[in-house]
Length: 352
Image 1 (tube, rainbow, N blue to C red):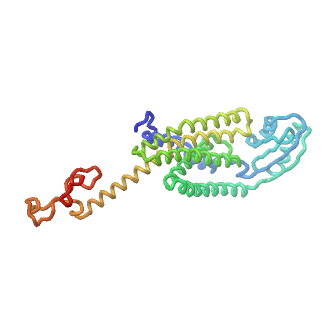
Image 2 (tube, rainbow, N blue to C red):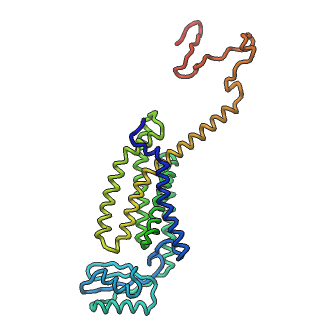
Image 3 (spheres, one colour):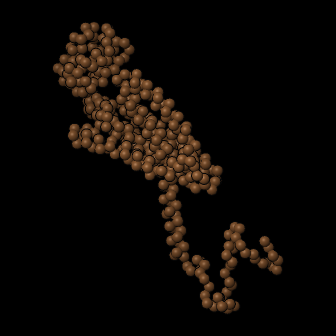
Protein backbone atom coordinates (compact mmCIF):
# COMPACT_ATOMS: atom_id res chain seq x y z
CA UNK A 1 0.00 0.00 0.00
CA UNK A 2 1.42 3.34 -1.01
CA UNK A 3 0.81 6.60 0.84
CA UNK A 4 0.77 10.19 -0.31
CA UNK A 5 3.62 11.09 2.08
CA UNK A 6 6.43 8.55 2.09
CA UNK A 7 8.24 9.83 5.17
CA UNK A 8 10.14 6.61 5.76
CA UNK A 9 11.31 6.51 2.14
CA UNK A 10 13.04 9.85 2.71
CA UNK A 11 14.84 8.67 5.85
CA UNK A 12 18.30 9.33 4.41
CA UNK A 13 17.40 13.04 4.23
CA UNK A 14 16.15 13.02 7.83
CA UNK A 15 19.44 11.45 8.96
CA UNK A 16 21.35 14.13 7.07
CA UNK A 17 19.26 16.88 8.68
CA UNK A 18 19.96 15.46 12.13
CA UNK A 19 23.70 15.45 11.44
CA UNK A 20 23.49 19.03 10.16
CA UNK A 21 22.02 20.04 13.52
CA UNK A 22 24.27 17.93 15.76
CA UNK A 23 27.66 18.55 14.13
CA UNK A 24 27.76 22.36 14.72
CA UNK A 25 27.00 21.76 18.39
CA UNK A 26 29.82 19.23 18.67
CA UNK A 27 32.19 21.65 16.96
CA UNK A 28 31.16 24.38 19.42
CA UNK A 29 31.78 22.04 22.36
CA UNK A 30 35.26 21.20 21.08
CA UNK A 31 36.23 24.81 20.26
CA UNK A 32 35.09 26.09 23.67
CA UNK A 33 37.00 23.30 25.37
CA UNK A 34 40.17 24.18 23.46
CA UNK A 35 39.96 27.93 24.17
CA UNK A 36 38.87 28.07 27.83
CA UNK A 37 38.77 24.39 28.89
CA UNK A 38 35.00 24.64 29.44
CA UNK A 39 32.90 23.03 26.73
CA UNK A 40 29.77 24.55 28.28
CA UNK A 41 29.14 27.79 30.13
CA UNK A 42 28.98 26.18 33.56
CA UNK A 43 27.13 28.13 36.23
CA UNK A 44 27.82 28.52 39.92
CA UNK A 45 26.11 25.22 40.71
CA UNK A 46 28.89 23.37 38.86
CA UNK A 47 31.92 25.65 39.21
CA UNK A 48 31.35 26.81 42.78
CA UNK A 49 30.87 30.36 44.00
CA UNK A 50 29.10 32.57 46.51
CA UNK A 51 25.44 32.81 47.38
CA UNK A 52 23.98 35.95 48.97
CA UNK A 53 20.48 36.35 50.39
CA UNK A 54 19.33 39.94 50.97
CA UNK A 55 16.13 41.62 52.13
CA UNK A 56 15.37 44.97 50.52
CA UNK A 57 12.31 46.73 51.92
CA UNK A 58 12.06 49.40 49.26
CA UNK A 59 10.98 49.12 45.60
CA UNK A 60 13.57 47.47 43.32
CA UNK A 61 13.84 45.23 40.27
CA UNK A 62 16.18 42.51 39.12
CA UNK A 63 17.61 44.96 36.60
CA UNK A 64 18.57 47.35 39.43
CA UNK A 65 20.48 44.59 41.22
CA UNK A 66 22.20 43.54 37.99
CA UNK A 67 23.40 47.09 37.37
CA UNK A 68 25.12 47.01 40.76
CA UNK A 69 26.71 43.61 40.00
CA UNK A 70 28.02 44.80 36.64
CA UNK A 71 30.25 47.31 38.44
CA UNK A 72 32.21 44.29 39.72
CA UNK A 73 32.18 42.40 36.37
CA UNK A 74 29.49 40.13 37.78
CA UNK A 75 26.84 40.76 35.14
CA UNK A 76 26.44 36.98 34.66
CA UNK A 77 25.41 36.47 38.27
CA UNK A 78 22.17 34.57 38.89
CA UNK A 79 19.62 36.88 40.51
CA UNK A 80 16.31 35.49 41.74
CA UNK A 81 13.46 37.12 43.64
CA UNK A 82 11.63 35.48 46.54
CA UNK A 83 8.46 37.36 47.28
CA UNK A 84 8.54 41.14 47.15
CA UNK A 85 11.49 41.87 49.43
CA UNK A 86 14.00 39.00 49.33
CA UNK A 87 16.58 38.45 46.59
CA UNK A 88 19.10 35.64 46.01
CA UNK A 89 22.39 36.40 44.25
CA UNK A 90 24.78 33.68 43.10
CA UNK A 91 28.17 34.65 41.73
CA UNK A 92 31.46 33.05 40.81
CA UNK A 93 33.94 32.49 43.68
CA UNK A 94 34.73 35.76 45.46
CA UNK A 95 37.13 36.67 48.22
CA UNK A 96 35.83 38.02 51.50
CA UNK A 97 36.85 41.55 50.50
CA UNK A 98 35.01 41.28 47.18
CA UNK A 99 31.92 39.91 48.90
CA UNK A 100 31.91 42.81 51.38
CA UNK A 101 32.32 45.29 48.52
CA UNK A 102 29.30 43.85 46.71
CA UNK A 103 27.17 44.03 49.86
CA UNK A 104 28.25 47.62 50.54
CA UNK A 105 27.39 48.60 46.93
CA UNK A 106 23.89 47.11 47.26
CA UNK A 107 23.36 48.92 50.57
CA UNK A 108 24.57 52.17 49.02
CA UNK A 109 22.00 51.78 46.20
CA UNK A 110 19.19 50.62 48.51
CA UNK A 111 19.46 51.95 52.03
CA UNK A 112 16.83 49.57 53.43
CA UNK A 113 18.95 46.46 52.82
CA UNK A 114 19.56 43.67 55.34
CA UNK A 115 21.98 40.78 54.85
CA UNK A 116 20.28 37.48 55.67
CA UNK A 117 22.78 34.80 54.66
CA UNK A 118 26.13 34.25 52.95
CA UNK A 119 27.08 30.80 51.62
CA UNK A 120 30.12 29.54 49.72
CA UNK A 121 29.79 26.62 47.30
CA UNK A 122 32.98 24.73 46.53
CA UNK A 123 33.74 23.35 43.04
CA UNK A 124 33.81 19.81 44.47
CA UNK A 125 30.06 19.95 44.97
CA UNK A 126 29.56 20.96 41.34
CA UNK A 127 31.74 18.09 40.13
CA UNK A 128 29.81 15.64 42.26
CA UNK A 129 26.51 17.00 40.94
CA UNK A 130 27.71 16.65 37.34
CA UNK A 131 28.84 13.07 37.90
CA UNK A 132 25.55 12.15 39.55
CA UNK A 133 23.64 13.64 36.60
CA UNK A 134 25.67 11.62 34.07
CA UNK A 135 25.27 8.45 36.12
CA UNK A 136 21.52 9.01 36.45
CA UNK A 137 21.03 9.50 32.72
CA UNK A 138 23.05 6.34 31.97
CA UNK A 139 21.02 4.27 34.44
CA UNK A 140 17.80 5.67 32.99
CA UNK A 141 18.79 4.65 29.45
CA UNK A 142 19.62 1.10 30.58
CA UNK A 143 16.30 0.74 32.42
CA UNK A 144 14.44 2.05 29.37
CA UNK A 145 16.12 -0.55 27.16
CA UNK A 146 15.03 -3.31 29.55
CA UNK A 147 11.46 -2.09 29.87
CA UNK A 148 10.86 -1.35 26.18
CA UNK A 149 12.40 -4.70 25.19
CA UNK A 150 10.04 -6.46 27.57
CA UNK A 151 7.03 -4.38 26.54
CA UNK A 152 7.49 -4.86 22.79
CA UNK A 153 9.16 -8.30 22.94
CA UNK A 154 12.06 -7.01 20.86
CA UNK A 155 15.27 -5.17 21.63
CA UNK A 156 15.03 -3.40 18.26
CA UNK A 157 12.36 -1.03 19.56
CA UNK A 158 14.42 -0.25 22.66
CA UNK A 159 17.65 0.48 20.81
CA UNK A 160 15.85 2.63 18.21
CA UNK A 161 14.15 4.65 20.97
CA UNK A 162 17.40 5.23 22.84
CA UNK A 163 19.29 6.23 19.69
CA UNK A 164 16.61 8.87 19.14
CA UNK A 165 17.00 9.93 22.80
CA UNK A 166 20.77 10.27 22.36
CA UNK A 167 20.08 12.44 19.30
CA UNK A 168 17.87 14.72 21.42
CA UNK A 169 20.42 15.04 24.22
CA UNK A 170 23.14 15.99 21.73
CA UNK A 171 20.88 18.60 20.12
CA UNK A 172 20.03 20.24 23.47
CA UNK A 173 23.64 20.23 24.68
CA UNK A 174 24.81 21.57 21.33
CA UNK A 175 22.21 24.36 21.45
CA UNK A 176 23.52 25.48 24.85
CA UNK A 177 27.09 25.30 23.57
CA UNK A 178 26.30 27.40 20.50
CA UNK A 179 24.29 30.01 22.42
CA UNK A 180 26.66 29.96 25.43
CA UNK A 181 23.70 30.00 27.78
CA UNK A 182 24.49 29.25 31.38
CA UNK A 183 24.34 25.63 32.48
CA UNK A 184 23.18 25.34 36.09
CA UNK A 185 21.06 22.97 38.16
CA UNK A 186 17.99 23.86 36.06
CA UNK A 187 19.76 22.37 33.05
CA UNK A 188 19.34 18.95 34.65
CA UNK A 189 15.58 19.50 34.59
CA UNK A 190 15.85 20.28 30.88
CA UNK A 191 17.71 17.01 30.23
CA UNK A 192 15.14 15.04 32.21
CA UNK A 193 12.38 16.74 30.24
CA UNK A 194 13.90 15.85 26.88
CA UNK A 195 14.40 12.25 28.02
CA UNK A 196 10.82 11.89 29.22
CA UNK A 197 9.18 13.65 26.28
CA UNK A 198 11.26 11.92 23.63
CA UNK A 199 10.65 8.42 24.97
CA UNK A 200 6.95 9.11 25.54
CA UNK A 201 6.37 10.30 21.98
CA UNK A 202 8.44 7.44 20.55
CA UNK A 203 6.49 4.84 22.52
CA UNK A 204 3.20 6.23 21.18
CA UNK A 205 4.38 5.74 17.59
CA UNK A 206 5.90 2.32 18.31
CA UNK A 207 2.65 1.21 19.92
CA UNK A 208 0.78 2.14 16.74
CA UNK A 209 3.31 0.11 14.72
CA UNK A 210 2.74 -2.88 17.00
CA UNK A 211 -1.03 -2.59 16.64
CA UNK A 212 -0.76 -2.57 12.85
CA UNK A 213 1.61 -5.54 12.93
CA UNK A 214 -0.99 -7.43 14.95
CA UNK A 215 -3.48 -7.09 12.08
CA UNK A 216 -1.40 -9.63 10.10
CA UNK A 217 -1.62 -7.69 6.86
CA UNK A 218 0.58 -8.55 3.87
CA UNK A 219 1.80 -4.96 3.72
CA UNK A 220 5.61 -4.59 3.52
CA UNK A 221 7.16 -3.57 6.81
CA UNK A 222 8.43 -0.24 5.50
CA UNK A 223 4.98 0.73 4.21
CA UNK A 224 3.38 -0.41 7.47
CA UNK A 225 5.73 1.77 9.53
CA UNK A 226 5.11 4.73 7.24
CA UNK A 227 1.35 4.29 7.64
CA UNK A 228 1.71 4.05 11.42
CA UNK A 229 3.77 7.23 11.56
CA UNK A 230 1.24 9.10 9.44
CA UNK A 231 -1.57 7.94 11.72
CA UNK A 232 0.21 9.33 14.79
CA UNK A 233 1.71 12.38 13.06
CA UNK A 234 -1.10 14.84 13.76
CA UNK A 235 -1.24 13.85 17.41
CA UNK A 236 2.52 14.35 17.85
CA UNK A 237 2.51 17.74 16.13
CA UNK A 238 -0.46 19.02 18.13
CA UNK A 239 1.07 17.90 21.43
CA UNK A 240 4.42 19.49 20.65
CA UNK A 241 2.98 22.76 19.37
CA UNK A 242 0.73 23.34 22.39
CA UNK A 243 3.67 22.78 24.74
CA UNK A 244 5.97 25.01 22.67
CA UNK A 245 3.45 27.86 22.61
CA UNK A 246 2.99 27.73 26.38
CA UNK A 247 6.74 27.67 27.09
CA UNK A 248 7.39 30.40 24.53
CA UNK A 249 5.04 32.65 26.50
CA UNK A 250 7.10 31.89 29.61
CA UNK A 251 10.27 32.74 27.69
CA UNK A 252 8.91 36.10 26.57
CA UNK A 253 7.13 37.21 29.74
CA UNK A 254 8.85 35.17 32.46
CA UNK A 255 11.86 37.35 33.01
CA UNK A 256 15.61 36.97 32.56
CA UNK A 257 16.17 34.33 35.23
CA UNK A 258 13.90 31.74 33.65
CA UNK A 259 14.72 32.28 29.98
CA UNK A 260 17.57 29.77 29.86
CA UNK A 261 15.30 27.05 31.21
CA UNK A 262 12.48 27.99 28.83
CA UNK A 263 14.92 27.98 25.91
CA UNK A 264 16.09 24.49 26.80
CA UNK A 265 12.53 23.20 27.17
CA UNK A 266 11.50 24.55 23.77
CA UNK A 267 14.51 22.92 22.10
CA UNK A 268 13.92 19.63 23.93
CA UNK A 269 10.25 19.41 22.95
CA UNK A 270 10.91 20.27 19.30
CA UNK A 271 13.79 17.81 18.92
CA UNK A 272 11.93 15.13 20.90
CA UNK A 273 8.96 15.28 18.55
CA UNK A 274 11.23 15.34 15.49
CA UNK A 275 13.36 12.35 16.51
CA UNK A 276 10.34 10.18 17.35
CA UNK A 277 9.01 10.58 13.81
CA UNK A 278 12.09 11.02 11.65
CA UNK A 279 14.76 9.04 13.53
CA UNK A 280 13.35 6.28 15.73
CA UNK A 281 10.94 4.78 13.19
CA UNK A 282 13.39 4.93 10.23
CA UNK A 283 16.06 3.27 12.39
CA UNK A 284 13.58 0.48 13.10
CA UNK A 285 12.99 0.02 9.35
CA UNK A 286 16.72 0.02 8.51
CA UNK A 287 17.40 -2.56 11.23
CA UNK A 288 14.59 -4.77 9.89
CA UNK A 289 15.90 -4.52 6.31
CA UNK A 290 19.43 -5.35 7.46
CA UNK A 291 18.15 -8.41 9.34
CA UNK A 292 16.19 -9.58 6.31
CA UNK A 293 19.23 -9.26 4.06
CA UNK A 294 21.29 -11.33 6.49
CA UNK A 295 18.57 -13.99 6.72
CA UNK A 296 18.28 -14.28 2.94
CA UNK A 297 22.06 -14.51 2.64
CA UNK A 298 22.14 -17.34 5.20
CA UNK A 299 19.33 -19.18 3.41
CA UNK A 300 21.09 -18.84 0.06
CA UNK A 301 24.31 -20.14 1.56
CA UNK A 302 22.49 -23.09 3.15
CA UNK A 303 20.89 -24.02 -0.18
CA UNK A 304 24.18 -23.78 -2.03
CA UNK A 305 25.95 -26.03 0.48
CA UNK A 306 23.15 -28.68 0.56
CA UNK A 307 23.72 -32.08 -1.24
CA UNK A 308 22.69 -32.29 -4.89
CA UNK A 309 19.82 -34.75 -4.15
CA UNK A 310 18.32 -32.42 -1.51
CA UNK A 311 18.50 -29.52 -3.95
CA UNK A 312 16.40 -31.57 -6.44
CA UNK A 313 19.15 -32.24 -8.97
CA UNK A 314 18.18 -33.31 -12.50
CA UNK A 315 18.03 -37.11 -13.06
CA UNK A 316 20.94 -38.89 -14.68
CA UNK A 317 21.08 -40.15 -18.28
CA UNK A 318 19.55 -43.52 -17.34
CA UNK A 319 16.47 -41.93 -15.79
CA UNK A 320 16.15 -39.56 -18.72
CA UNK A 321 16.16 -42.57 -21.08
CA UNK A 322 13.38 -44.29 -19.17
CA UNK A 323 15.53 -46.98 -17.48
CA UNK A 324 13.28 -48.86 -15.00
CA UNK A 325 16.16 -49.21 -12.56
CA UNK A 326 16.80 -45.52 -12.36
CA UNK A 327 14.11 -44.95 -9.71
CA UNK A 328 10.90 -42.94 -9.84
CA UNK A 329 10.61 -39.87 -11.98
CA UNK A 330 10.67 -36.47 -10.22
CA UNK A 331 7.36 -35.02 -8.97
CA UNK A 332 5.56 -32.63 -11.29
CA UNK A 333 6.21 -28.91 -10.87
CA UNK A 334 4.14 -27.39 -8.06
CA UNK A 335 3.63 -30.58 -6.07
CA UNK A 336 3.66 -30.01 -2.32
CA UNK A 337 2.96 -26.25 -2.63
CA UNK A 338 -0.47 -25.01 -1.50
CA UNK A 339 -2.48 -24.50 -4.62
CA UNK A 340 0.22 -26.19 -6.73
CA UNK A 341 -0.47 -28.27 -9.85
CA UNK A 342 -0.42 -32.03 -10.30
CA UNK A 343 -2.74 -34.87 -9.20
CA UNK A 344 -1.78 -38.10 -7.46
CA UNK A 345 -3.47 -41.54 -7.73
CA UNK A 346 -3.78 -43.69 -4.64
CA UNK A 347 -5.50 -47.10 -4.60
CA UNK A 348 -6.92 -46.62 -8.10
CA UNK A 349 -9.02 -43.66 -6.93
CA UNK A 350 -8.53 -40.12 -8.06
CA UNK A 351 -8.17 -37.60 -5.23
CA UNK A 352 -8.35 -33.88 -5.79
